[in-house]
Image (cartoon, rainbow, N blue to C red; front, side, top):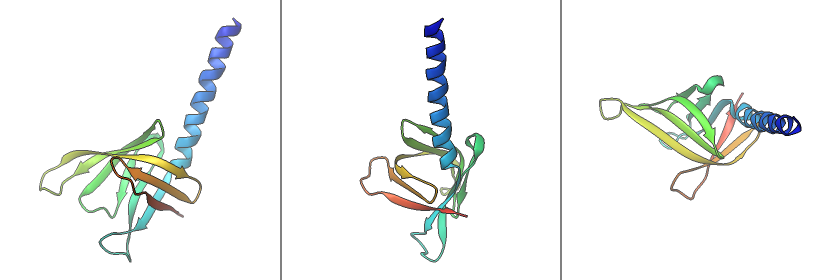
Length: 117
């Protein structure tokens, strides 16, 4: 009986930790656009894994989740004239109430985003 209770407690603590990490990620994250530094671009991470793009042209994010400290953004890119499924993968370097710093998979330079109020 004690083992079952300990296992249940461990599972609850693990799930609570995941929820808090995801909860901290929820919001609108933007940075100056590479194409036009006077404009902001980025993404919106919503509850229940829903996502949206912010000024990313033909790239439209639809959903997101976190796995092992990695942010996965799924959506469609219609830049070629037809929709192509995309998955962008980022290592989460740091996140707090104001800033999100991520590193795109396969790259070494980080990208910093600011939470939009």
